[in-house]
Length: 298
Image (cartoon, rainbow, N blue to C red):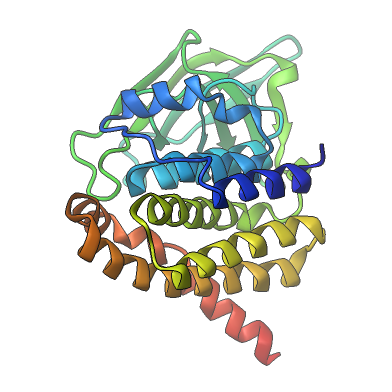
């Protein structure tokens, strides 16, 4: 089954009500539900769709899209478990950034990264080491010698999702786990909004179906999901892909306005959770819409 065929198949199941939200009040429970449903076994955009439909809060929506992005952007990641992309570093200089020391027979990683998604439960780390011409990507498991992860006490945004720090002390990295950023797939730069917005529309669809939602915004969410899939089906790249993501973002924002009002009228507890993390809806909008306007005016 091709990636787009699987996506359309699972989208049809979502529309028919086969994919339902699952209560996941903690990250541990979210992890348990994710693993028991084998979400990571699917194609990247399907991971975002299934995870978003299963989510009961926006922290898990983001994480579902993020896991889909990880499998698209870094296909060398193991299929099982959760993965995180470690890029951010401490700007104060208190915690030095990562450095890879290479020799004929070994690679050693030392230094720090300042943001790790799902730091309490992540299994695989893709660590970016900045180079003068291209960046190096390292695949490291959390339980390897010299790896230390810790989590922030009170993240201000998407607080249900653990968000932490990583320290590496002379971590050995096998040659077959060293990759180049030059090998990253097309559309890498927009793969996060592509997958997160897909998860968000799947979330709105599954929740609305569960609560007997208005057909109007249900149709809008489903239309956005078809748009997300079409970008894959048509092999859209470069500026055309960017404009497609900007259109997906704009449509999702419009649908979310109606969905928020629907929640306020029909599910108080979910509406409160939505209000807390509603910034996710426009997380990518400013950059996407500004550049899209520039591209269209060229």
